[in-house]
Image: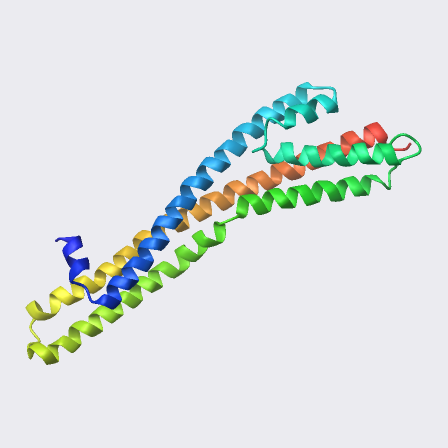
Length: 221
């Protein structure tokens, strides 16, 4: 079986569908590689940043170190929280934020967390779309190709398997290519979503820890 010959011998409509599926496949693989590398980098830098955060007793030092870990979501959250704490410390007449002002800090941390989640989820919708749509696009190409094969029976005046089989084989290639595009996208989407959920849990825990530190430092008795 020569796949390339089947593709070149397919009808123009099937070939267009195959080109669409090829685009979905190539772009989804680009996203898969990009997401895999970015999530790995985020995990590695987060681990290093948290090590610095736990060892340091000075928030200013942690803020300076956070600048070196731009891929870490926890580092970004800390920078947003530290900036808000510095602003509240200047604005408060007591020299530090009150208990009510800590609500502003909580909102700043939530906003930073949401921004990091949005960044990690970027382009994930394309993987979901590829996984759900590609098989149907391939099926459309198969149905069209089979219809074309049966219509050719009127031209050849022959309903033998030898006359119909090549066209059906060409049509089935579209389904195979659709599954080839969809399966990796679905696997990658589920894997990345699971990892992103782990990141979200870690960010929530870190935000709570940072709020606790702010309450100990600035909270009113």
